[in-house]
Image (cartoon, rainbow, N blue to C red; front, side):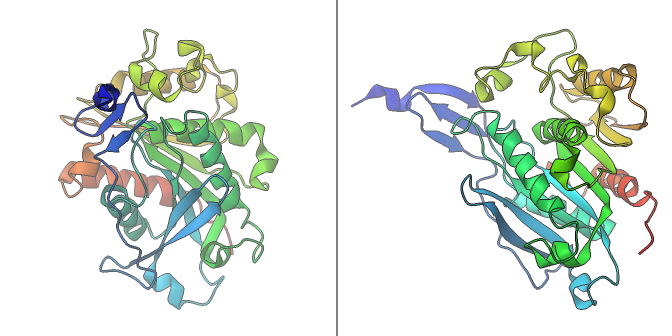
Length: 317
């Protein structure tokens, strides 16, 4: 028997394990919640769409059920593009954790949301995840001109004057990198400008330098702390972040808290002209809101995100 089948190359207990022979076991994000295109108990409809058959990029779209009963173009809704966390090696918009969370945000904020399913390491190392998320963002904004896009929900109900990005942990890292790219490749988004971004418990490099094993695992050819994807402070493009409003959510007991503060400091020192909001939850750990979604503090965090989206000036229709 080949003993290599049982040799562990990488483990994130109790959520993930990769073996030296290439086999991968994911114990988080592997379940799949079915969609409910005609509505569910929380008043939110959902469906899955394929964005790229070639790379298998897909997404789950969420829409308040009552919206589909209205005539198209009567009321346009803010757009939220969500990138799930999981270190870039686990997680899924289809699993119960993220399906339930994004559905709850849609219900509370009365928005349309697109939760992106991007390729994961180690089967697909970085930059695959970033490429997939940019492809998804371009697909979403391809609906900017009414009737041009392939999805009727986005064609009929999305307000592209109010487009937001949000994500947690590694997903928050993606949010930042997509916003940076949005500034340098504005035409790639069909002229759509981002209204704001929300980074929840973001994953970046350590303030005192260096990167951890998670980043090296998903990006073996990284240059380390000199890689702007993991260290935004060295990026000359940070001052041109492609939005005017940023919300960063931190948790007091999160071991990534210092990295989140480092991001905020770097953004302020970059010369970026915009509004930065920081919310810190006391006595809580990393992504606590996903695992204790009905707790008072998790609901307060969600309310902050909802307020961040809805306080944006509504465009005339």
